[in-house]
Amino acid sequence: MLEARGVSKAFLGARALSDVRFGIYSGEVVALIGENGAGKSTLMKILAGVHQPDSGSLWLDGNSIILNGPEDAIRHGIVLIHQELNLAENLTIAENLVLGREPTWGGVLGLVDRAATRVIAINALNRVGLVIDPNTRVGDLAPGQKQLVEIARALSLDARVLIMDEPTSSLSHQETGRLTQVIGELRAKGVAIVYISHRLSEVSKVADRVISLRDGCNSGDLPREAITHDAMVRLMVGRDLVRPSRSPVKAGRVLLSVSGLRHQASPSGGISFEVRAGEVVGMAGLVGAGRTELAETLYGVRSMVAGKVTIRDNPFQPGSPAKAIKQGLLLVPEDRRHHGLILAESIRSNISLPNLKGISSAGWVSRQRENKMVLHGIAELSIRTTGPEKAAGQLSGGNQQKVVLARWLAANPSVLMLDEPTRGVDVGAKSEIYDLIGKLVDQGLGVLMISSDLEEVLRLSDRVLVLHEHGLAGELSRDELSEEAVMRLATGTAPRRTTP
Image 1: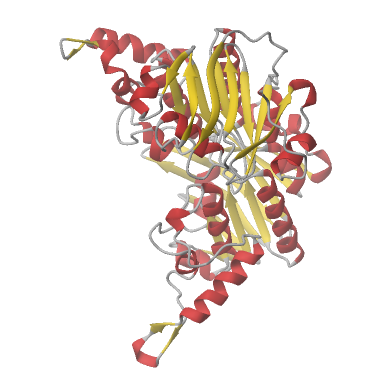
Image 2: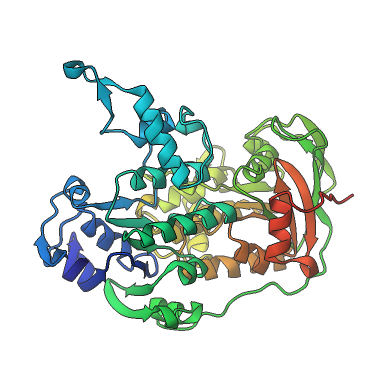
């Protein structure tokens, strides 16, 4: 159906793709895998008309085609869902879904038909299982809900070829399951789906075939019967990766104690838990369960309505990020591109700006101390860069996350709150981040890790707190941990039980 034959592409002399081949048939799901920088996004943008190849050709239904822009691709039925959300925050869901193709009435006046818009929106949202008022402003949605709106918009275009770039990066386990159902329904209707994901467990479930890229070249294909985690990793990185797992630990002193904490959306009883030195406390739950809101309340971004918090036995009243940082309580946010980094600034600036007090004397920054701190962070976290002056926005997702981590590790935290620490990160960088988390807790830090990746939660956590509707549904010890146990609590189908 859709083919790329011998496609090559370079940017400013740097080759991104070299003689790449790709093909997909109607009613097939093909997963495109590879580490960040392997060329996946470049290939997809060529297929979607965003970039034009320097050499090679594109074919659709046996005919050569030239795509001079995304509009050409859409006219051919090729639709790309970008990894980064591409929604108008100030418009409603319904307005976003019909943007640029609004139904009208009134002849030459071209007035927008609000009733027809609502019908289109409801039908599109039903296809992804999102039950919400179409007149809700997109800016008021949670990240997972925004991703579903993005997917619904693409589906409403009746695509013949649907390219999904990390479609589940913000979705909960339940929402991911619904998307898998949608993919199955589209496959049955003859839609060809290109599925890009770093979550290899998802790839194993949805893909009919896997195509791997490495360093801008094809590195191999896998038919359905040969798709395994280890086989995909070998194609992507050219070697086997050791899977980290947490060994049982003897936790140390209590670093963070939370008792009856409530924010505006919390139930009356509040939330209570502890984080000890040398342990990873996972926090699981469906999108909208209140995990991010809880972390932001502790960090001072949201107001605490009631409750008691202590850090290293010292009373702490959350009020601002500056207060939290001063006490050694740091947050690596879910949306690193908007809330964790200054993309236009250098790696140096991103690491040093929050830590100026430690590298300054009498109001003057010591370049020697700054260089030592920045270069140590780059080396310690294996940040792949040409140098500290490179803009953070030019780094891969995994290296951007490492810059955020390097910034806060330079501040000598006691408790590190990680919100979706490996979202949009390739398998190699993910393994490195897992290793880093292990080293940090071995050094006596406490880690509170929020993740929608259940495999990640089960692998790294010493204990897991499960939230449901902004309340603590239960706490699971390592011996009690299983995907089923977490999901029973997360969906509210298990008896609510809190720790004393």
